[in-house]
Every structure is written in structure tokens, then in C-alpha cells.
Length: 156
Image (cartoon, rainbow, N blue to C red; front, top):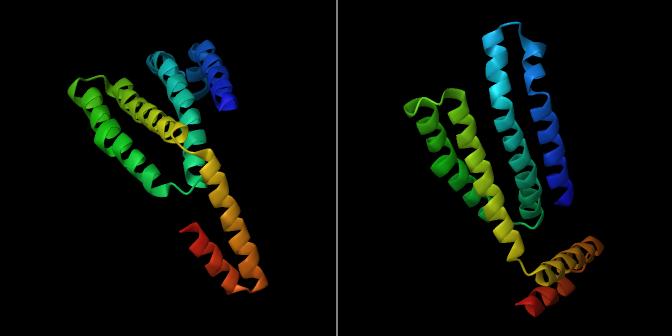
């Protein structure tokens, strides 16, 4: 997690520091260059939150919490992020800034909820479950179903 946060700050610093140069890579139109420069701090914030939520959603996937992850993702994007982006971008006329802010709100909600899920986890229990799954796989590979069934009864 430390690496994701450090990377987020580094990318944000570079993005914001060079914000007036990015537009020149794509166009010579001064209005477009100014617009890109004004959006770069928002892009930096988006990149920061995306890095954090990527690490945390990876923990959720690796821990087998796909159902919880799908609920968090659905709520973050379809209930909050996309509707907020539409309102900010088109109703309140913030245009591309509003669309980005809606996306950032979804990323932040994801990161916060995945953080709560991760912090509330009993990691000793998760480690024990992982060890049992490994033992089962080793036993199944060797062909003894009786021991697997005994482990399942012991777990219950």
C-alpha cells in the first residue's frame, strides 16, 4: 500500500508540474492546450485514487471476496460515480471537469470501502483458510478424497 501511495504522489507531482506541456504533445490549438492544463490536476487526483483502489481490489480478489468487490464496484460506479458525472458534466455544465470528478468520486468510494473491508478482516483466519485450501489441493493431487472429506468435517 505504501508503494501505491508513493507512486500516486510521484505521478501526481509529475503530472501537475508538467501540466502546461502535456497539451503541446497532442495539438497546437491554444484553447485545447489550456483545457488540458486545467484538467491535469484532476487527472493526477484520479491516478492517485486509482492506484490505491487497484491494490485494495487486488487484495479482495486474492482473498476470494468477489461478491463484496462486485457490490462495492456497482455502488461506487453505477449508484454514485456515473450519475454524479452526468449531473456535474451536463446538468451543472462543468463539462469534462464534471465527468472526471464523477469518476474520481467513484474511485474514492471504492478505495474507502475496500480499505474498510481489508481492515475488518481477520487475517489469521484467512491464513488458516488458505492453508486448508493448499492442503486439500495437495491431497486431491495425490488422489486421497478421504482426507479431504475429513478436513472438511473438521472445518465445519
